[in-house]
Length: 308
Image (cartoon, rainbow, N blue to C red; front, side):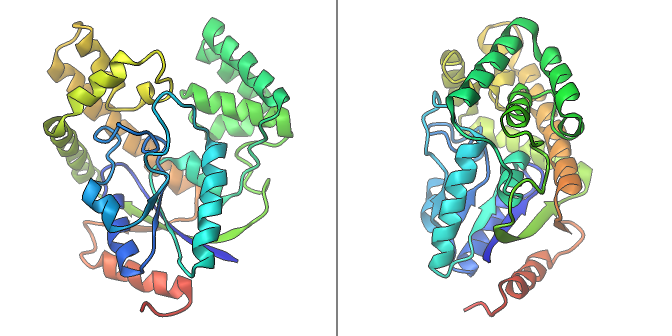
């Protein structure tokens, strides 16, 4: 059975830094589990590792698409599984690092996400038309009727999640949240990082300020100017909140406050998702000064050998 280590948790908690350290320690490679780091040219708002960090440890599924390209959960699942298989065959246990819960769930639970048949495309187009004409509320009603389990578990404010969930139930007959609708194909050790909420929120606020110093406004303006074609990227936290500033409707400080607020809310949703949907071994980074050493020991146990 293949083996994989995943590092999950809320935004700004330190997943990337830990992933880099552990991947170096165990002579392995990193697979990004982030739905926005796939896009080229969007580096600051997506919190990518620096060029030096990307060079220090081989990274996969980073900078693989242009921002105007569509990238699905199924695309991620298929590519990540192949990379994991290849790395395992080389004797490496890969580290999947990221905070996009549904991406990781699709991989861990081997979810049946349907195919790319004409029928699937037809369903998707019908749902996109419903969203355009009737709004998200209509999609929510459809999902509640056709797949009440998914309605209770996924983020129903996210139209892409709604469309995908309806698409899967209609094309496969199975709920997208059914953890038994795929065959177990790998053993995962899930490392979860968390922190006391006030400390985590302060880390988030500080990271937004640092992003601004690094050039977030220029990057967000680039997305704003291409918002008609950057269909997925334009909805990322850190970009969309700044659009009113570029439209000269809202002061910059107010927009940045909105980035921080939405980032804090996102962190809360991430933690809730991982806590409720996955079997995670949690580590509070403030409570345990030696949590990294404990994690290393547990990884060695999971691998079933010794770290060379």
